[in-house]
Length: 256
Image (tube, rainbow, N blue to C red):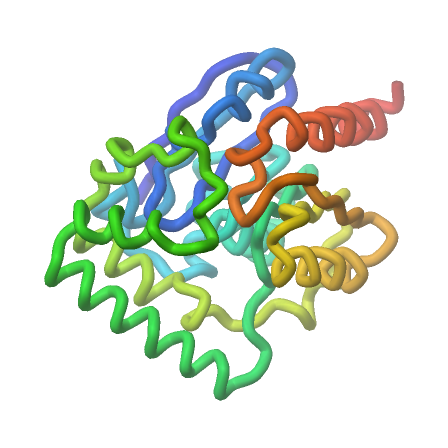
């Protein structure tokens, strides 16, 4: 059950894991900026893009991503950040470092998690009933995506997804289905950069808490002028945080 991937560039490998409803082609300027000095692997997550026929829960996804990506820095956005954390827990030998953008280790409160799972299941039913085009229009109208520039919306690319693939992804790998990982964060012993948009107050707080839970090898950073999709709303500012940090990771690993 191999995941679809597209590759460009050469150098230390970085694997990109997109958000829900996107595909591996939805990284905007981030991918070419990285490809100048890195081998960039853009994966389609289970239920998305070229992997739309693949169905997997998050632990299985972590193993599938590690198999497809190999040893690399794993950079994930939102759903992709949750998947990147599962690569670290399911296949730690594959992870050189982690970059988590607008993600969460999970919902701790059982009642809140059950409520979110019910919401995810209802969303999945609606996607099946109404189709992908209606979902994309409704999804991108949410306030959390108000800061996306036209070139960062990727509406046509999002419509490549299938209703069944997206619905199954929500059911198996949505935030409501995820076992929270807060208790295992201290065991993550690779460099970690936890990023959120400065205007995304909820995820900015989660980013700070995530980095603190991981420990001294983690750093949190906020992208000024950005909301939830920080890397697409402010790609230059995001790159200004990411690229020097990656250079540090590469230098430390090679002892140069």
